[in-house]
Image (cartoon, rainbow, N blue to C red; front, top):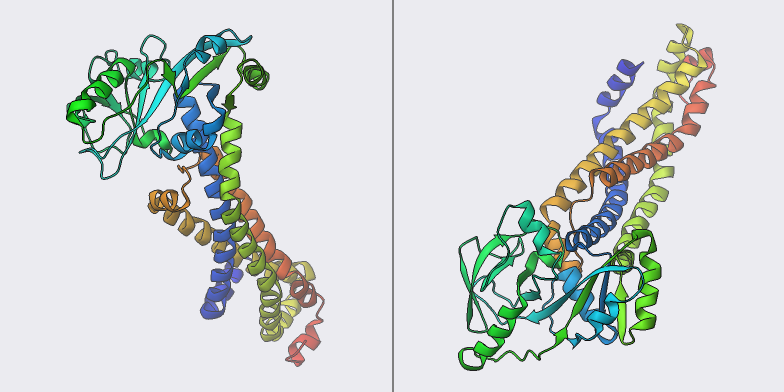
Length: 395
């Protein structure tokens, strides 16, 4: 049966090639939208995991700025009084806190555009310290920095910000988020840099004492993170708490338009293709009427004829689905950085589990469309009488 189906498909290369392309477009549209959504969501979750935080507390008035820093690495400088740090630490359910200061740099030798500087306190840090331990590196010392994966600077390189020179001692692994274009330094060095900038920088850095831009929070019980976030907002006025689910929701909202367009394209292509594929299948059945009659006369059952016609459409749809999924995956991987920049959304290759589920779902839908379109012609062909099929050239 498979050999007969294969020969039939190969015998009509132009017509079947057009069908393969139609199915490939349906599969590519479905796959691309959900790939982007999964890649963006995984990027956000990866960033939160690398930060080691369950919650991120930011000033209520600067939520958009803080999301831009975390998600896209857009340089921004904003503060609130670090007196909130002990108050957050005293909230029930909080295990550990880490204040960070966000500073938008001037253009540096590593980059053609400003980058985000993130000042951390080594005594309270749980973001960089685990990474240093994993890489068997010594703790971050005076005038030492760790850079994101997209910063063009290797270990031992000197970079200057606001007239203050730093030495790169490490580079973070890629995350597909704002961390990739960020630079971590010690809080003490940030204040030294601000002091040096008064005489050595084109534009001095104003960095008030006793400030923080964000407070990373670890909770005692991850299942209670949402309740802890409510308590923080209630007990520490002027703050807002960002969670991984909230950031994923933000990214999903930003991607919603693109996803809807791609899903709509797939829907339109499906609605257009269904009658077209059904008509082509019917035409093929007409052309093969005598062949089907001969097969019936030689002992082929109605069930075999049904499987023959339906199987051709399903296999063509499967080939198109594989081509559509494979080609769109290659394009998305090759242009991942460009897509991320254009959409202003963090993007990474989805986890294997997500990639497999998206691919399988897309493939199943594409094959189902092919089977549905060929269902009527397959039934009509199976019901033909052998004598009438051989004698007549029409259904």
